[in-house]
Every structure is written in C-alpha cells, then in structure tokens.
Image 1: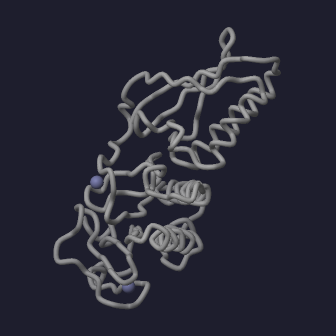
Image 2: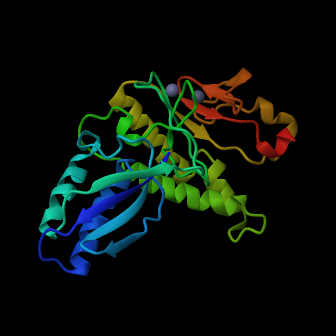
Length: 258
Ligand SMILES: [Zn+2]
Ligand SMILES: [Zn+2]
C-alpha cells in the first residue's frame, strides 16, 4: 500500500471551518468506498492549500471511475467551499501494511475481518489477499458504508477480546466467535447480499478462538446447517472448515491448536 498526500488548493473565498468540513466529507466518502485506508488523516494548511495524508491500496485508487455516486458528489462540493479538485502525490510504499491482491477479477471472495488490519475485509479467495472495495465489481454506484461501519464494530470487539485483562469478560469473545451474535449475523448477511449482487461466492469467515472441549473441536458441525464441514487439508493455512451451501469458513479453535 502507498502513503500519499492530497492537495486541495484554495481557489475562492473560504473559511477554515467550511474548508475543513468539505475535506472531511470528501475523505469520509473515500473511506466508504475503500479508496483510502485507516482512520487517521492528518490535515494541515500551508500557504494557499490544505494537505491531507492518506494511505491508498493502489496508485489508481482516487481515479474518478473508482468513486461511488456519493464520492463524486462530495468531489463536486469541494468547489462550493472554495477548494480545487485534489491533486495527488504518492510519497512511497507503506511498510506497515500488507499487499493488495493483484487479480483484475475474482471468481470468489472471502469476507475476513481481524482487529489489526486496516485493509479491505474482502479478500481474493484464490490468493487470500485483500481486494480494494472499489475493485470488487459493484456497478450500481453505491458505496460500502454499512460494511465499513460493521468492520469498525468488529475490530473494536476483537481488540477487546484479544486483551489478557478484558474489560468485557466473555461478551466480546461471544460476539466475535458466536455465529448467532448480532455482529456475525450482520456480517454474514452482508456477505450473502454481496454474493447475490455480484453473482459469485462470498465466503464468511467465522473466527474461533477458544473451545469448551478441545478434544471434539475438530468434529464440530457447520453452525449454519449442522452438516460436516471439516476440510482434509486446511485452506490458506487458516481455514479448517468450509461449508459450500452456507458459504461459511472457520478454523479449529486457536486455543486447541497449540
Ligand atoms: Zn487474487
Ligand atoms: Zn452449512
């Protein structure tokens, strides 16, 4: 991924608060389309311009064709607050983030979320590398706001359940690993809706951290339909279970693997 800077030139009378609001609104629409990644976007004014630091999945992330309808509208609104279209400068590779999937198209995707990654939650099923949301193949101009908001909630709960002294004891873990938790049901429904829209499988990954009975964990059934779903060899070195009809993936509980 790439570290980049956007320059918004001041082209008409504006105020600091109006300009800041316009930039914030535009950046938010870029987040919901997966065009910029992360949560922190340092923005400063120097001479006759505002500058924002962003992380991009690919150099073409900010091309006009990658925008959602809402993003295009936000781009036009910059002029109403006295700012130019942003000028992009790529500063270099982001050494802290993982690689973006190279495929131009995908036969199947995996919806996979974990606490630490700021990249897209949609992965190429073949390479298990993140696919930028704007490259997923949506054609209706809608963005991924509900998926990005779901990712934020998932990561907040996952972050808590990873800590040794948890402030929410069992409830965070149950949210993350229980298939019928509101968190997983929301995520699963989003995967189902995307699979229908894109007309391809979108597998949903169900995290498994701990188990009440490690001896029988490898024999657990698909929580969606109750079928056997154990794979003979793990997929991508992570998934030990796959149910094709439910498009669900999971692993032998991590606590039982050591
Ligand atoms: Zn791929
Ligand atoms: Zn199933």
